[in-house]
Structures are given as C-alpha cells and as structure tokens.
Length: 113
Image (cartoon, rainbow, N blue to C red; front, side):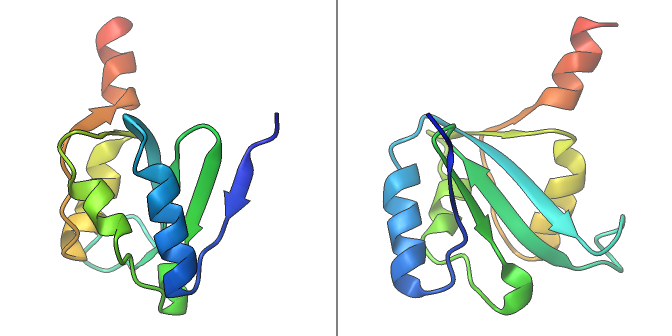
C-alpha cells in the first residue's frame, strides 16, 4: 500500500484532511522553516501523517491551519516530533498550541545514553 499525500489549499481540502486524520491516536508531525531561530525565521509549513495519509499544509502560501489546529492542541492525540523543541519554538511563536508531545530525539538520547 502506498501512502497518500495531500497538500490542502482550500477550506474543503483542509476539512477533509482534518476528518481523515482526526481518528488517529498518534500523528507524526514536522515543520519547515526559513531558519534556525523562531525569533528571526518564519514557519513555512506543517506536516502531519497517520501512516496512511501525509498532509503538508503550505502556510507560506497563506493557507491557514483551520481545524487542523485542533489536532495539535488535542491532548488525546500524541504528536510525534523529532527534535520537538525546534518545532515547538516555531509553533509557539506562531501562536499555535500543541499538546501531548513525544520527541523521538529525546527518546533516542535516553535509550542510548
């Protein structure tokens, strides 16, 4: 089975992505930015994946999070990041609330200490 990729740009596409991802217990998440500092850089995109569907939300094109913001804030859904501190710095600077985080980088450090 191949993973489906969606780049939503309309409200209907964003709602469709939300409805499909909202049943997941955990989501892989990532951000793309213009730099390494949230003070001087910009948040370009946010990606979500439930393993079957990957969604790339192009914020740099003026696309808003819409209901996908609820997934990031949902305490029942685990958001899996690698180096979450970096992503959360940019998300927080953009005013995007995120809850229930698992950081694979920290987990790797603990396991291989």
